[in-house]
Length: 101
Length: 472
Image 1 (cartoon, helix red, strand yellow):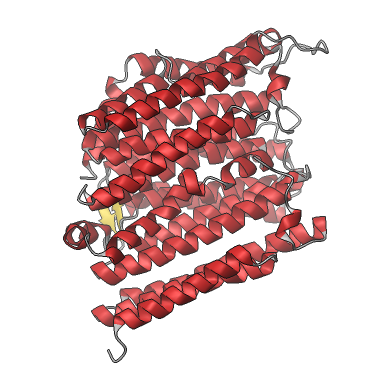
Image 2: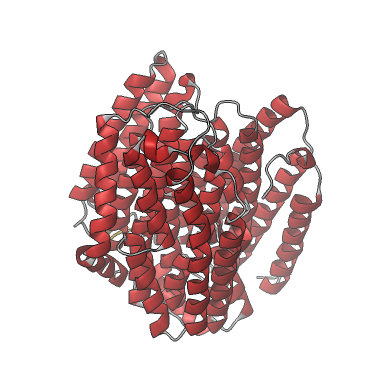
């Protein structure tokens, strides 16, 4: 393996942190969903690197499944967001604040 | 490989097919849908009971059928059956969507059955996601009460975020232990548990299961989802889904076999935070379902006490507690569903005069609530006793002491509910409630089970011990 595992882990960590910031700080439901997708992809990166490190196929298979799950997640999430947009006319998470404590 | 091991799952897949056809081709007919669901779910319990003794592995050892998984499958099937029982007046959900409701509920149950049998990280992750997606869709399926959209969005976003965190944890765990089989990880992990990547990986992996169980930092979805979802869906999330979460959390914590004090400290902290916060916030609640949500957050803390003991008696206590919890919570939700017959949210004040309107439901509510509070001779007391004893044996005196104080705090709001049902009189003279014969039978069975298993827990205890020994 040309690139050391720790470097890939570091890159994935940075990507993960970016995803977390995007999911937590952005004030738009779709951007929050994209943040979650970035987090999923960073996990996929770690799997590919680990699969190469141990010379196994399990990690790569895991990534294929992550793709499928991410697609399912987006379809469920976007359906929900469109439904919410039709009912409230807003994508701003601040608007969804009826329920407290 | 022998397909007979897979029969409960195959049966539930067949059931999904039936509801899929109903949802596609036929005109809405809630009565027919309900009876088909009731019949199929009754058969489901029978099928699961018949396959309790099976043992073996399937699909290249990623799927293990043992006593632990089969016992949980029976509990899940019973939970599913009980929830179907209270769907006779499914007023919270539009008639057109009833087949879809049953379809998603069955899929979720199937996913949880897969979850309790999985012994490989990919299978666990897939099963967990499948069950979560069904619930994300079930919560906003409610007929327009305004809050259901908000609770659906919140539940989905928090859930998706947590599952991404969990996936990252699985990835870094895999990077350290170079295997995805749980059995292999048990062998390798104690040797490398000192490495930060291993501990962080395991902790992040646990996040996904802690989310399902609604333990402290991942609890924020619970009150909103409980209030926003239709009453029957809430009953399902509060009972069956919690049981599956306890099962998988037990299996994952058993991975470390007590070799990481760091993990123990984190879990103890989460347990204390979760029960304290749950109990304190529950005091101010006015909505019955929200109160039950906070009570379930605090119960997640009690279950963690059993799990964190990391001994066989601790795991057995946690499983016992999960069964007890299912019965007591379900009894409370049964009353909620019957009193709020139009599918609306139930305020605690609306329980006023229940003892006059329907003495049977009032008694069931009282017993369910006393069970949750842990008052003897109910099954709730036995469950608490078992997990506390397991923790005491490991020397966690402070933890048990804090839990005891919490039990006392929780008495306050549980007694508020009983007070509303028994001592307050309703302003408008509401007519007595009509309780159908099947409901009376169901209430009678539940009440008997809560009391009898509380006084004579031996048989159930033996069963949970045997199930827990399959883990070690």
